[in-house]
Picture (cartoon, rainbow, N blue to C red):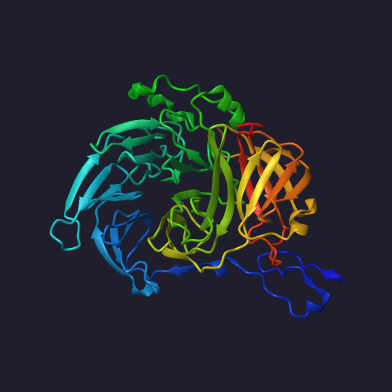
Length: 494
């Protein structure tokens, strides 16, 4: 039977037969799989959300850039209107990290880590103890401090933005530091520019997001390894205050490429995942790992990363190649009300997202927001994982594929590009290549596809689109784009 094909877009129609053309069906959309609920925030209050954490009693702690902490009861109720907000603390300074332990709430604010608690049971914090304030701050509003939850050893990790996001004018600006359970600060990594969030993967390794700017051609997800260099050289001046790390790394050469410098500078850790600028966002922020055990859908143990400017949540698949993390990022969910910064999974598997746009701007038109994303129980047709191979990639899918479309080379396009590693702000896409997909093999389970690519490019993003692939039931991919950061090409035998 003759087929009529309609163009694919957000509201597109999938391929239908000529006899069906009079009654086209609407494609599923993101909201069919992940429903967005919005909390009614207290009237007259400004909740520019910078941090989220769950208290032992099930209430949600919400830290704000204006230095307040609110506790939200019934935060996981089916109807968000049932949530009840009460102010727990105020007078703090731009809260961008919360971590609960025992009956204390640890607060990462611009100038220190302070722990607070309610000692008399009136639902208001009345005891404040500074745990550590060994980093320095000036008067520049960019000198943010983003704090993690506790790692396996009980440490808190803090990533410190540069002064003005360009220079390190105060001690340990542009560093990651750890705060031990005893309150000691351990200088951990240099080379940070402008972080937007920090979090752990499923095995407890720590990552942070850094934003496009000087020495950052685009935003990236970076693995924090003690003693290593993250890429921005202005913070190297403080190595004399961290003698346990040894001599400062070599400074990178402006105008080079990330993997060229990674081979020249032993301490340098290239970004595990780069988020193509404008395509995946413009200001990567909070990080959260799906440890819900399937309550959030099929993406167990993958990372979800916010983008503040685009008001989106992105999805990240990571793998280790030659001992280094790298992987792919995918679009996931758009349409949030403000600029997404922190995110936290709840006990029910839903994802709470906080937002603020002040000073930063966002597609979401609200100045601030608190929202919750729930899986509807329906699984979207997506690329679940993208694995690098010595001669191409292996894709796995969330549903069985149609072998004819998934096995056709015409269903895929691939191109590669890099960003200049330079002292100038950002970078265009450079070093473009257009390799051929020479062969496609569909797995016996019909849920995997092996792509054989004519030439992989070390250090380049490999941008794959798969508009022609259909599921066994005829659906196109909800998001046909995938962006793999190929720092290391797998060897034949690993």
